[in-house]
Figure 1 (tube, rainbow, N blue to C red):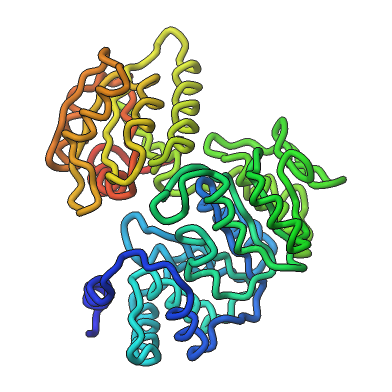
Figure 2 (spheres, rainbow, N blue to C red):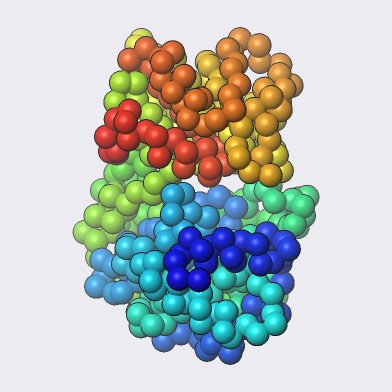
Amino acid sequence: MNSLPEWLAYIERLHPKKWDLGLDRVKGVAETLGLTEHRGIVFLVAGTNGKGSTCEFIDGLCRAKGLTVGKSTSPHLLAFNERIQVNGEPASNAEIVDAFAAIESARDEISLSYFEFAVLASLIVFKRRDVDVLVLEIGLGGRLDAMNIVDRDVTVITQIALDHQAWLGDTRDEIAAEKAAIMRTGKPCVIADRDPPLSLVQYAETLDVEAHYIGKDFDFVDGAVRIADQQFSGITSSYLPKDSAAAAVQALISAGISLEAAEVREVLGNTFMPGRLQWIKGEPALLLDVAHNPAAAEYLRDYVSEHLKSRGSMKPAVHAVVGMYEDKDCPEVLRLLSDVVDHWHFTDLQEERAASSGQLAENLKSTQNHRCQVVTYDKIQDAFNNAVRHCAIEDLIVVFGSFPVVAGVLQSASSHVSKERS
C-alpha cells in the first residue's frame, strides 16, 4: 500500500466493529510506539456538544502565544487529513501513510479500529513534529475512548446531552460518568456544562480534581470572558459558541498560560469551523451545521430564529436540507427545527447507519407539524439543487444533520456561491 486512499480502505475493513470501545488493544500498540507521554502540554476535551469548537479555540489561543499546536479531532468533513492538524494545517498524505506503516508494523496481531488507527497516527505526527501543545478531542464517551490513553495536563468537559445512548447510557448522569473518567487526580478540569449531572460533580470530588465550573468560576457575559479576577472584554463574532470560548480561555489559564486581552479578542472573534454555523453567501444564503442531536438542534433553532428576527418584516422562507443517521433521535431533532423550517428536503445518505429520506419524512409527521412542504430524495446533491431551485433569492437554505449531508453540500456548493463567513 503506497497511497493514503489505499491505506484508508485497508483500515476500514481491518476491524469488525466501527466502534469498539476499550483501551487494552490501542494502549498496547501506543506503548510500543512510545505515544502515551508527550513533551508538550496536553489538553484532552470530551463532551456531547461544543467539544470541537472548544478544541478550535484552544488551538487558536495557543498559536497566538507562538506555540506549535497539534490538534486531533473527528470525524472529518471532506478529507481524512483534517483529523490531524499542526498549526491549523492538515497533515500531508505522506506523513499519514508513514504513520500508518509504523502502526501496522507495531501492532503485530492486535486488531485496531479505523478510529484507533487515526488516534495513533495523530500522536505519531505530533511526536515527530515535536509540537509544544496537543489538543486531543475524545471521539466517543471518554472512559473507553482511545484518546484516554494519553497523559494529560488539563481536561475539558463540555455540554453533556443525550447522544450515543447505545454505548454510553440512557441518562445524562450515565453519560456524564463515562465522560468524567478523563479526569485525573491533581489535574485541572474545566467543566462547561451549566447544569452538570451529579455523577460528574461527584467524580471530580472523589478524585480531588481542581474543577472549574462555568457560571461559577468562569463565564462569558456581555461580550466578555470572566476568569476569577480577570476579564477579557470586547469579544464579538457571528459564529461564537460562548460557552466553548470561555472554556478554552479557562483551559489555557489552568495550564499556566497567560493571556492578553487583545489575543483573546482576536482569536475568539475570528475563529471559525467548517460545517458549524457556516454561512455561504449568495442568493439564496446558505447555512450549514452538523446539528444531529436534540441539544445541538435546539441551539441551531435559536440561532436561525434570531437571524429571522433580524430580517424584520422581510422574513425569508427557510428550506432545510437534512440527512441523518438512524441511531440519532431524529423525531426530536426534527420537532425542534420545525419551529423555523417551512420546506423540508430529506435525503438518503449512502451509509449503512443512515435513516432513509422516507423514514425522516415519517419522523416529521410524528411532530404533528403539517404546515410544511416535504420532498424526499435519493441523493444529497439532488436535494440541495432542488432546494436552490425552489427558493426565492431572499430565502434561506439550512443544511443540517449528520456529517455526510453537510460534507456533500459543501462539495457541491462551490458552484452555487463562493465560500465565505457571514
